Amino acid sequence: MRDELAAFSQLWNDRRYFEAHEVLEDRWRRTGDPGERALIQCAAALLHLQRENVAGAAKLFRAAATPIRALAAQESALLTFAAWVTAASEATTLDAAALLNGRPPLYLRVREGEPGRRNDGAEGERHA
Image (cartoon, rainbow, N blue to C red; front, side, top):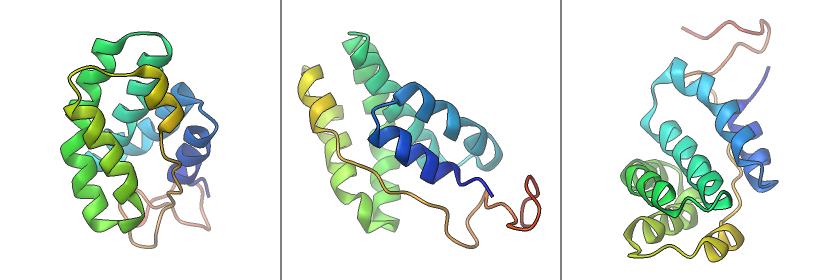
């Protein structure tokens, strides 16, 4: 079984934002989950910051803030992350270095019964 959320977390923690975005995108296309889309947007925002596209990063943080707060309401381990995204989304100017260096780590994983969960016995099959 491939756990895209755990892979996303590892890539995020390794500061590999493009790869993090890519690994979660297929899962998001299957689930349509707004929280997963917001995680992708956060990774893309940091990629924009690495490339000095502050305006693009700001737009993505604003789009991600509300769904990330909703996700954090369900998953208390994301409260610090949600506060970080919210602060970035509300900032009048973004400090790229501070955001890149101060981004919180992530430790996400799929839990039994979640949308997009794959069957441990058959790679590629989804639970009904």
